[in-house]
Length: 393
Ligand SMILES: *Cc1c(COP(=O)(O)O)cnc(C)c1O
Image 1 (cartoon, rainbow, N blue to C red):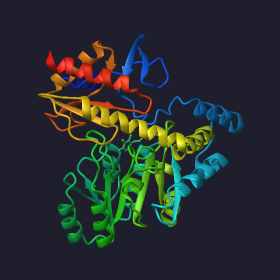
Image 2 (cartoon, rainbow, N blue to C red):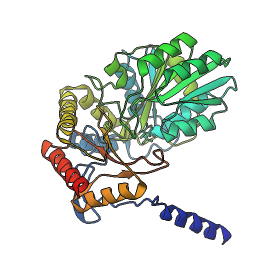
Image 3 (tube, rainbow, N blue to C red):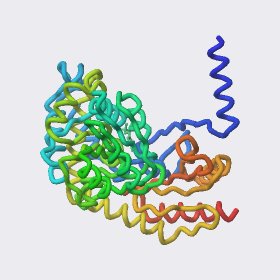
Image 4 (spheres, protein in one colour):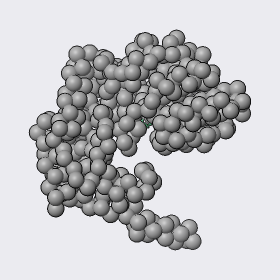
């Protein structure tokens, strides 16, 4: 029982540093108005940026997919689990992204975490590769870089000059520059145009994780590449589907040869059961909405809510770094103060998560409010009033 005692000591140490996390039990579908542990709350905590997670058309498509394809896929993609629904979805993603990733094919994964592990471990496997990783990258990219048998260099946040020096000094045959598009704890954008220019100059590939951009950014919802007007055959694009798309999974869009290589070599793709085909069927309904007039209207509403927060929120000691995305951090400082603010909001009927180290740097514990197209202007006004009340208290 020595292990149990050691684990217990570590858990107590977390608690002493206010780092213990609690899971709350949600009784209702993902939406701003929710019931949590039996209590009604207004949530600013999901990544359901377009409000599609409980959309009736998606629920109907999921049910239809289950009727048509059954529930489980029964095997991995390379054995017998690759269904017509998966194949159609991949063709649709390739077409959807064709203006931004040249000669693209697309590959559908169980989760974004697995897609990131797959891309980095497969492309970084040959011992001749070097990975250049942005300092604030998501944990799944960090883990992918660690698992890959490649040399890894971290470049400071948004620091293209340092990256350029690293690229210039590298003799690696394969160079992968890896970055989040929208940083998940700050909501700011990576300098992708400058990163892409550096990649093209030094013969590197740009791996872009657009988890918070796909569906949300760009007039047509095609994500950060559309928003910034970037197009290149040097891009490996990862869009995750559990956030704005409202379902789950992820896709990689890249040069066809690269996709074929992932199918043949990427272990997180090969050694896992294919996702339920009904999910792929529901995702086609999601893509219909994202790319159509309803998606456009939802994006416009989301951006109006962000503008409202800009206009109405006036902070004194807390700090809200500028963010034009759905991710709206309010930096408080100490872990205890951030927890206390989150608890205060909870007391007022609002759920805004506190984010603490190691997810963010020490001393920058924060509230992380996420806005979605399912929120109303009244909801945002309620958030603003609660924050003003707590900061004044
Ligand atoms: C959420 C997220 C992921 C993981 O995607 P899942 O589909 O939830 O596994 C990867 N990268 C970033 C930047 C994310 O925010």
